[in-house]
Image (cartoon, rainbow, N blue to C red):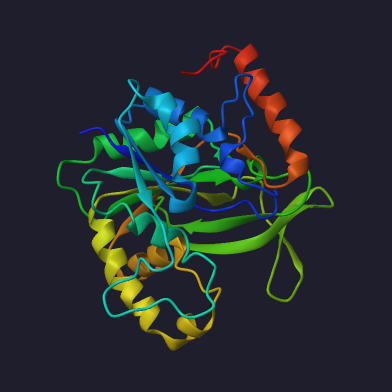
Amino acid sequence: MKPTLLLLAAGMGSRYGGLKQLDGLGPNGETIMDYSIYDAVQAGFGKIVFIIRKDFEQDFRDKILSKYEGHVPAELCFQSLDALPEGFNCPEGRVKPWGTNHAVLMAKDVIKEPFCVINCDDFYNRDAFMVIGKFLADLPEGSRNRYAMVGFRVGNTLSENGTVARGICSKDAEEHLTTVVERTEIMRVDGRVSYKDEQGQWVAVDDNTPVSMNMWGFTPDYFAHSEAYFKEFLADPANMTNLKAEFFIPLMVNKLINDGTATVKVLDTTSKWFGVTYAADRQSVVDKIQSLINEGVYPEKLW
């Protein structure tokens, strides 16, 4: 069974200043997610599912979904603040979405096969899709609790225009993930990749340290684990009174690892990430895409 690609496209790019998922960066208006989908199809993925907000459904259908007709099956799912388990209500005054793992949960009724989760505004590069696609396609039928993540080398994931947020990973001798810690400020300091710790100190790490770029591989049982833990998350008064508390994928993954419920293989890739974290990143991304076209990696017109 071919794996499915699940694209998280419900968020607005606050630092970028607009709906960057729909920003045309290729020579014919291609978005970053267009290149991700092209790479995924080349890597053997058989279906795409988008998580979006209902309020820009028509714009999304017109500008994005229409491109893929006749190329790859595509479905839409919607993330909303009130999409909560029975017995729970959205706290008054909350406007922030419930986070990436809540977004993943929105696809539980349409994905029945191994799947890969990605962000829509990150350019992952083809090798990353080949690596995760092979892992998912090679899983024996009916596999459960055997997950993976693509561990990008942190030195390949930085912005020239400011700090970036990355999940810094630790792994065991069998290349299984042991922890992923979200670091919200990472940049080069005196030539070395460094993150700012809880005390505000810069801590240097090796350029090849694996980081999560939210490129995960799961089997469908992940949805049941997520539903159960989301109820625990919502039952915690601290998460209901904090109007910015979010149910992140790393939160769920760490729990499953610590419980001994699941293993997460860390897959190495030589891919160099780039993306539009800041508005100043935009021209650099346009230039890099054009360079890949000039090298023959992508056609001038994707679809």
